[in-house]
Image 1 (tube, rainbow, N blue to C red):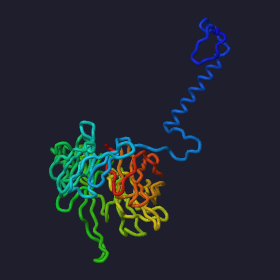
Image 2: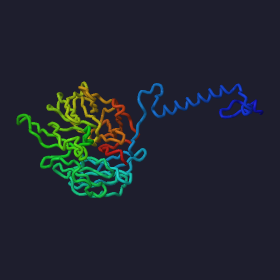
Image 3: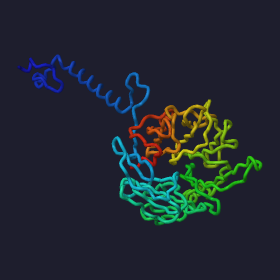
Length: 395
């Protein structure tokens, strides 16, 4: 076949073109190339989620950005392995059922979990089934990762918070929050972001009881202790009183979620406490229509501004706090949430939860993303056995 008899093939160069001619089919080939390129771009956009296929109302399954999911079940850690769970190490026997296990990224690039069993601080590698845990000293509770590689903040008791090395237990900083009070009754609640003060330590102490002998409510006084740097720069005081509440339910990215007086019950409202550079703002929010706040705290330590709500004859669900809103909004797809199974955060802010038909059934992992807060989506994860709970997305 001569060059003049060849069919048009993208990428081929006709003999006449090499001689400087402009063949009649060249424009058509360029149009074909442009159409092919446009199709490729559309395909890539569709696969990346920038476009949706016709008729798609829900995005596809999402997956952990931080690592494999880790469960806690019957005294042992389980690590995600394809369509199932592989056995991780056994947990210390004295570890309380709802005691938190805080993931801390080590210098090796792997995460260890830090917890308190009895009064013994320990770390354990979820990916090593033979790990028996490393004792790190004495502590009352684990507050959070310190934000430094391998560092963790722990409450030694009576509100005395120090930073320790998660591998050795050595004290890195004996006073990361230099103005923090301590003494009988004080305890560390967690970290709250404050403009100009990075993450400040939230402390609680018994307050003044309210009501008569039959309806007395034990209040707690909340206080923020700033980290050393903004104190040294003079941008924040060492200590700031926040407010007094009946009970703290959860911590959001930049807020404290606490019960208002009158909880639990149909009239229960939630106080959203936000600390700015110069002030403390408190507002009350209502549950979604037809729902009531359950008063059940979600395990897992998530900072996603989500609360458990109930309705007679229906499974529990999640409601989200909306900036400036007078009421919380129901999160679609969260019906059947298992509060005891926990709500854990990933590195990108995605929160993972478990929904079940009932307590005896396997659960399904679902994901809530700050960028799409109105719904939860299925996550590619194996079924969660009855009684098991999420620990982290750090395996």
